[in-house]
Length: 257
Image 1 (cartoon, rainbow, N blue to C red):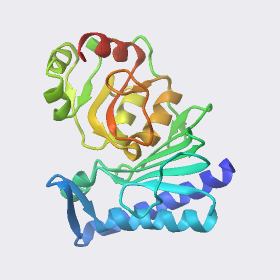
Image 2 (tube, one colour; image 1 turned 45 degrees about the vertical axis):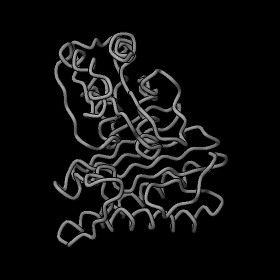
Image 3 (cartoon, helix red, strand yellow; image 1 turned 120 degrees about the vertical axis):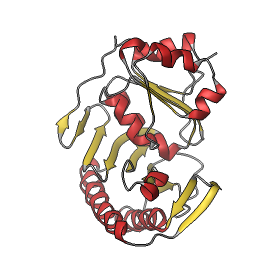
Image 4 (cartoon, rainbow, N blue to C red; image 1 turned 45 degrees about the horizontal axis):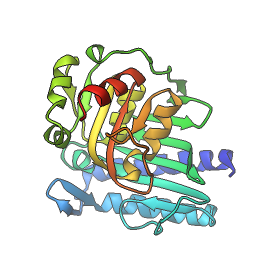
């Protein structure tokens, strides 16, 4: 895998896609409903994924794209080089608020996460991680996660489906410094990565929601598992908990039966 070439082009394509997304703020979007009234897809989601699909096919014909919006390949394994893309993570935020959404892109080789990019389009923050080389935001190194941080010293991020499925999580919220939720998994992963939160829990995320965030968080010493502590299969949807090591263990032991 030519990491330098991939990195150069991935950054170029992300910025080109982001420019088109920002331009769409002044345009009328075509919006479709997927699984429910709050699960939306816009023409920009589809156009962005289609743009990446075309570029990857042209420059890396042997690579495959695993994406959310149906413009990518049919993926049943992670053999070879696979790009995992969420063209607009936080589509509801994009539609309703025009902020708190991101382009999330990860490159996996034979099932191992190698490169990760999460671009907060409105804040112009590019988070980047490379396996074995740490992580940065806008080129500045991100400090390692504090392994000894306690639950009472951190904010928690959790969606309501988690608290409905695990009512004991409200006790964890009471112990913590409070509850937050942004509505874009990749950016919530980055809140944990940068120390703005101690943990983020979700009851149902797809591979493209977490592929990039997982690489970055693990490079910084964070823990990413299913909510039962099991390993994440990057081909399947499921629960997700990302946290500092001590908070991860505390939540599993005391609040997630």
